[in-house]
Length: 283
Image (cartoon, rainbow, N blue to C red; front, side, top):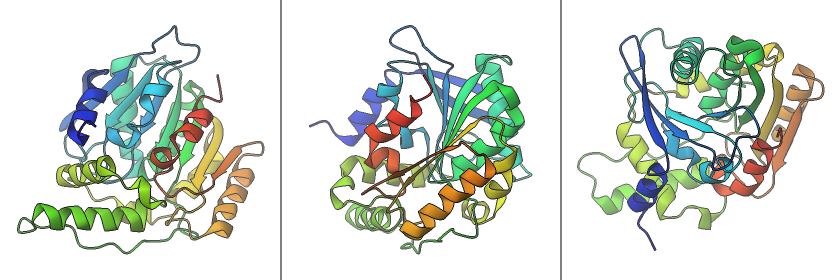
């Protein structure tokens, strides 16, 4: 059994590492080149708050079988530079699309998926990109204040915390916020969560509690797709997940919505096969 660190290293060894410039910093990108001739436009994946590209670690190898996949660490998170002012979702979207343009070309069409806080950015990016964005999938999205639940978490470990104490805190917070099934909280999940928290230098919870994504949804020209784990702690229960389905249908008649049973907020980690199936559904 390979250690969590080895699993991350093994995954990154399959990617090309790229960097793009923005005012005040660099974005850290990964390109997962399709194993076979791509059958559709590249897929751009945006991770969640306090996270990094590795929120997609259980997805990229399957997705790259059929298409090029781009991941990155968002500004202020992971290995990317700080997020410059203004700290707005629109500014995040401009930085990410600018970086993608630098690396993939300004005319390159793409499909887009965003998780949690990254879904807020994905919505704005889809509006900004217009017809270039062919499909916009929002997973466990925040920014829908009427039905959003702010989960209470344990305080983060301090420099005085022992490794055992830190691991216990991360495990408990993963259970409260991110994952539903106890056996999904494995050594890799705990390692990724702890490592991402240690690297973060932007706090996204204030933006997550706004209604910005709900206001953005009707303006997204791309095919709109929603994915939620039915047990998502930020959603507020089964009825609230159904309220999100209605919101998507009202924003874009004919939109897709997938409620994944027995899965929590980090649904693409807990139910990767189901999420991968949806993300490849436009091929």
